[in-house]
Image (cartoon, rainbow, N blue to C red; front, side, top):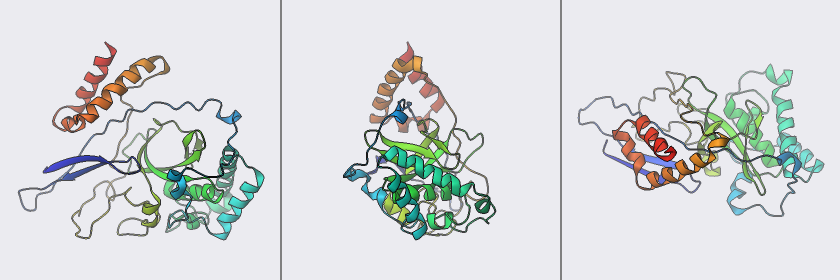
Length: 302
């Protein structure tokens, strides 16, 4: 390994840039890594009793997720009609979100829809006509939310419910005034996901949505940068897991923090941030990562 750099992009995604080279011509290089994510539950109690009026203006940082893009192409007659109907029924964002969910549910659970063949593309305008995968569901649900005037974004995530290695899963986050990004899994039809249920791997920007056209090994509508992307030089020739196997990502619960352990969680969080700031994440590459994390947690519990 020649070099490793860690950086954040403008959306807060953690980007690790690595240069790997072999001194032996023709040698196969296999890259494996572990990532540890410290997450805490969000307090969503009482959210159903609150009101969330549509604001006159959405925050600037959410505006890109109102656009109609290549994969979330909501400016079609059918999807726009759904959005118009929902907006005419309520001026409350959370109620509109619920209306979007019910419309999406009615579409994908209808016998007619279930009897269709798998769509060749995962873009929203195809997903509303023919069934697909979690990518199709995320793009379709996101498009209904945007057509209703709610900023919504697709995120690639690693699901905690997966018992086997998983390539990637896609969920949707809708923006609620005063709350922030509210997670929904349209495939499992769960609303108000807690962060530990789905570890978000990548927040998809509108730019990446517009780059999500059919390419090499990936169907159209699969968000750009959430799969192995092949450069023009074809440097990556073998992407094990994406083609030969079911998946190459595996997530599991490492150490739970229950409500009675909130103080321990906050202590661990502070220590974790100090470690990350000091470059500790790179040191994990040269020692047993499980033992290193255990030492952090044991130190804070003493």
